[in-house]
Length: 173
Image (cartoon, rainbow, N blue to C red):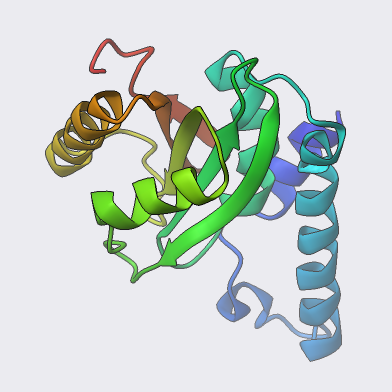
């Protein structure tokens, strides 16, 4: 399937992967272009205002965008009261091991978008799509604050190696 192809073809992209005889910068640039095209195709549900009810719905959209990124990124998908996608946007870009994440900045963006709910999504460049203790603590803190403001944190997803982990499905939210 297209989803499977995009998840596997573009995992762990960096220029070191292309230091092979006969493969130059042009092929590497083409690969980046194809990766971006596949990510945009996977993000098409936003243009259709797709209803996002499950972590799987969100994962299909985010894996092509975040798998293989060499640094951590924090994204949010905001939804209306019927869970129709309003926005899908990057909030922060970090290093190979962390991304700055402040509840105030996240919730400010959700409020600016006039959303009633949101999904948090970030990636682990090391490949393991599992929540760290810091991820869990941060997610619970954001959920507590969001709830007090009348906002719904629907899930926090972590992408790594073409897979997606849901903090909610693991019972940690």
